[in-house]
Length: 108
Image (cartoon, rainbow, N blue to C red; front, side):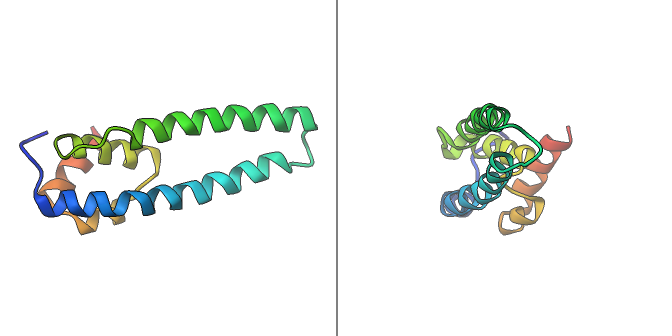
């Protein structure tokens, strides 16, 4: 956004995205299992509610994970932070400049 991100930030980003994705999906999958096994809902409700949630999560993943490039890394980090794929603690590995830009974009 404000110039080209540092090479070290880009390398960190590329290396960490698969780990963040898997961590996020572990949580999503646990919630989906909970939806599918909710004894207070009918099998039909469980199926359709879970299907809808999977569709929503697929949209989040597509938005956050497709099309990465160094020039739009800030944007993707902001989206990941907004959607819970990363936390502010995950940003500690990046340069102060990048962290400040991403957090300020999220806070608005």
